[in-house]
Length: 349
Image (cartoon, rainbow, N blue to C red; front, side, top):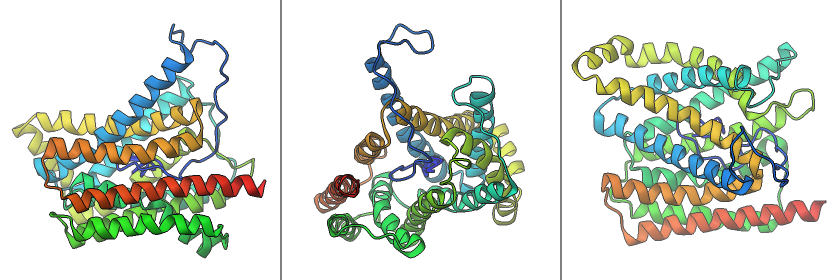
């Protein structure tokens, strides 16, 4: 989960973190002076490479673990799984901010700011739960292809909510994003309509969160870095998810305990899955801190393709040439979109 907001959280930050356009605040790049971090002897370039590799591994790892748990292992409780992710994110974020000092603690200053964070938590819950649920029905490769269309929904919500229009070049770059998904959907051997609609809902929710986030946390007094935002959003999300899990999934806690008695391996899976879900958010924060928000977007585009290839190799889900071509067109469109946005901002300045 990317707290994109994973999948996240955005991605999603979160369980199903895909992170284009989901940064809380642009964090200045780390100075290139020959400094040593955390007392290590690593050079800044090697440290940055290690952080980027960790970000890739955690993003792909949480996707594969979610898919294995929800689809193959048979743990069909996506809401409860997301709830565990949120509890994990709160616990680890508390340690990271208050004890490890990975980011300075930023307190909530007003009830108004608290309500804004609560609003983001609701949207975040919707996006992550939908993302996890879609993995019950769709292969990770197709899930990632759909998730790559986040910029398309972001552009739509930006116009509808903020009335902010982009240049024609930016909108033209979105055409291959959508066209590629049309091609991939028509040729996907394991296409599932419900899974497709749920995944589209997750992608739209992630885009909506990024727009709302930029809208309601823009003043200097209300800006929160991603670590602090996750610290406050995670427990709120857990409280929101709990009644839905009980109502829709039954006494899932008792069911999980019973499963653990029969097969202790599920405890390892759930704890490991929740921990990796937090690492997605932590490494997302560190990549942005040591590089830039733009670099994170570029890496995110490549990550989707890598995750798709790895999932095919592991789960052996069938793919077609047209499906691969469609995914390639979408990723290319996202790259063009990022470049067009960069040029648009440069022209504006």
